[in-house]
Structure formats: C-alpha cells, structure tokens
Image 1 (tube, rainbow, N blue to C red):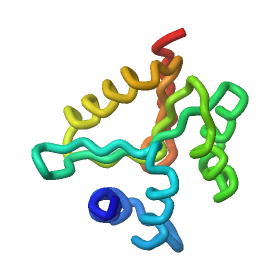
Image 2: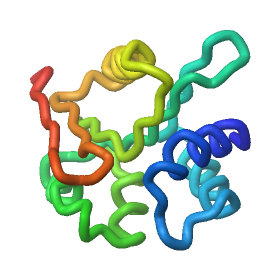
Image 3: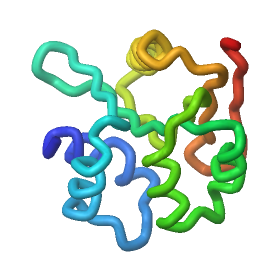
Amino acid sequence: MRDICKFLMENYYSKYPVTGLNEDVLLLTLKRFADRVIAIYDGDEIVGVSVFVLLNDDKMWMVKDIKHANITNLIEMLSSEGSNLHFLIIAAKGYSVIRKGLRELIARHEPETVSWWNPYTTRFHNYKIGG
C-alpha cells in the first residue's frame, strides 16, 4: 500500500493539494479502505490508482455536495455499499489506464451509474450504464 500512497502523493496531491494531508494520513486511510482502492500496473510499475465508493441512491447527495464534504461524510461514503460507482480520486499516466481501471471496476461491481468530479470540482460527470 505504501507504493500506492507514494504514487498518489506524486501524481495527484502534488497537483491538487489538500490541507492537512500528509503521506502518513493518506497511508492509514488507504489501508483502512483497501477494498476501495484499485491500482493498475505495467509490469512492476504503478501507472494508475483510483479511490472509489459504491453508494446507494439515497447517499448520492454526498457525492453531489462533495465540495462541502467533511471527514464524517467521506468515511461514510467509503464504508457504503450500493449500485452507484463514484470515483473520489483518479490518478493515471494516460487515458488508456483510466479506461482499463474503469472496465475492471464495472466488470467487478456491475454498477448502475458511474460518476466523478473533475479535479477542481467544477464539473460533475454522471453516466447511467446499467439497470
């Protein structure tokens, strides 16, 4: 998990910093919610990492109000189970890596919708794919 943490710090949080977040805090969070993390490898090298949640329809408001999310809401989202796949973080070395991870998660979880915010939380992407 340490290599995934390092990848996120170098390829995501260096571009989109979060106040109060350091490598130790991120590592503890990733370990606690390891089932909500996907890493894509090219040989031994990590080329993409994503942190995702699976929410039911009643909790999708949390995603739409992510700009105002607090740690309690984030932990509740990470602990949830549902049919809506939402990416909290996407860090990849190219679009083909993102597509590969997306295909893998769709095959594994068969979600009804897939969504994500752009890194600046100015545009919300939400796509119905099943159901």
